[in-house]
Image (spheres, rainbow, N blue to C red):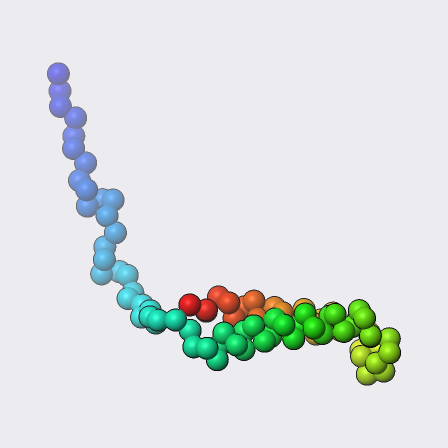
Length: 87
């Protein structure tokens, strides 16, 4: 019976010279970073709660109208984006 050809393993391996080394920052995030991150999320939440409860009584907030949602959710989104760098 004829023997089948053996495939070379070099065809399936990745050349390590083609990879670019990346520096990884080790260690946890600073307390200031975490405080700012949570602060953004809480400010956005408080903004939306104040808009729902007292938005009509506050003239400057009533003038913003629908932009209150953009501002409130904007703060929260910035806080959530910061969580991607949190260690």
